[in-house]
Image (cartoon, rainbow, N blue to C red):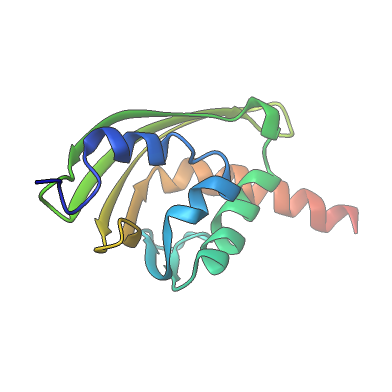
Length: 145
């Protein structure tokens, strides 16, 4: 009998597309619940649709990066298959538009619905590091106006 939810290998394939929102967002349920954990952090918050998540997180983070340098690697997947829940550990590297290196490790806790879409995702990452890159870029943009 097939597993009711994506298995670890399928989840790894899903998250291997994390650097391409046109593909990754197709794996998000229409009424997804995404929480980016953090206090006093511009990108932290709860997002209820793929578009809200994309605009609040992806657009702001990638605006500060040389997008062609972004690499996201799935380190490990725990769960999936018989369980609706999985943990996905990933590592990202990139270069900011100001030439600074970005090295970020993060974990996503995800719950899949019966259609195999991500219904809930809670993201934990080095918020201070990301915050500094995003804030520096946004402050530079404001000064240029």
